[in-house]
Amino acid sequence: MHIKKIIFFSLLALAVAHTAFAQTESRLHKILQSGELRVGTTGDWNPMSLRDPATNSYIGFDIDVMHELAKDMGVKLSFVPTEWKTLINGIVADKYDISTSASITAQRIRTVGFTASYYQISTVPLTLKKNLDRFRDWDDINKVSVTVAVTLGTSQEQQVKSFFPEANIRSIESPARDFQEVLAGRADVSVTSNLEAALLTQVHSQLAVVPVSEPRTPADLAFIVPQDDQVWLNFLNHWISIKENQGFFAALQGKWMPIN
Image 1 (cartoon, rainbow, N blue to C red):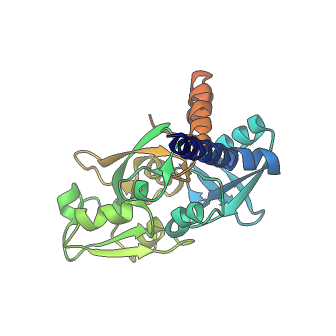
Image 2 (image 1 turned 30 degrees about the vertical axis):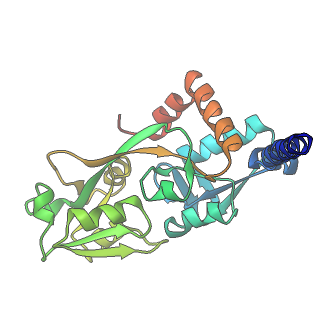
């Protein structure tokens, strides 16, 4: 019995030590120790993250959020360029500690974690204004004669395959974008979030949102983090809650987002 007790308490001590070690190895503690917060961002999603190629600087809703997060943590902020197709892999490979926002999908949560959501988007189709007589609803797009452009690696890329099984799907690789294919006449329709669509139609007068009966696939936006780091995730979720209560996110929505 004495030997069994020794074994039991030895195993218990190892378990406690392992838990303590895992907590000290959290990215939260690494960030505070290194003094640097690494943020992966694509820089191609208006109004969340936009990169100015002339200065290599970033602006946008998520960029303001990350500046605020780094300030509150007392660390410097470093943006790590990435693409939609490699956004998840960058988290898994520890190339950055957090990413700017992305839609929470069943496919993504198999590999990475997400913070609490702060905004919801849905999917809409874009076309040229002169084509609005051809496209009035979703079914008008699902035809073999129609070419649909979508950005590679985005949540919309998977959606269009189920939305439009009859159409010709063109996945566009960053830094090019799907809506540019429509502007150039190489695609009839592009598919993106209602948030980005509202801004694109302001910037490009030739574009219009197809007047569909309703948007599809509502999705929550959140920041991507490693799946196995509950300490880091808990810190971020509490920070988001504090900032929501202070009105920080509401103020940013008023600054960056043209739709409710």
